[in-house]
Length: 138
Image (tube, rainbow, N blue to C red):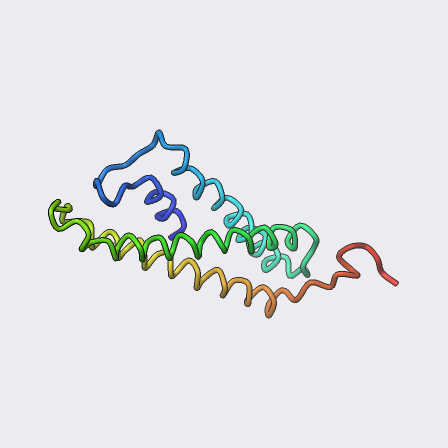
């Protein structure tokens, strides 16, 4: 799903074309690398049955910030779909609504699954014990 959204970050919904030369289109795929890194850390912790460590904590904190960008992208997709009536004099391509709904649904699923993975990390791997993580055992 995240890979599909990475591809759609290059897609122009109004023009039905892909734009690979715009710098803005690369922001989401670059930020999604942090998400993939977090998922990798979670998988390693599950396989090795180890507790949370500082690397996982730091990546999760960065992912909290990136989550706000996911929220922005979700509302941006809703906004773009709501502009369908603004272009009555211009005929939009037939893929506008289906692709727009797909992007909006994928963005919502990404928000939901990101919150779920935060919750699962707490339940399965455990919460962050700051005294132990920072090496300040007393």
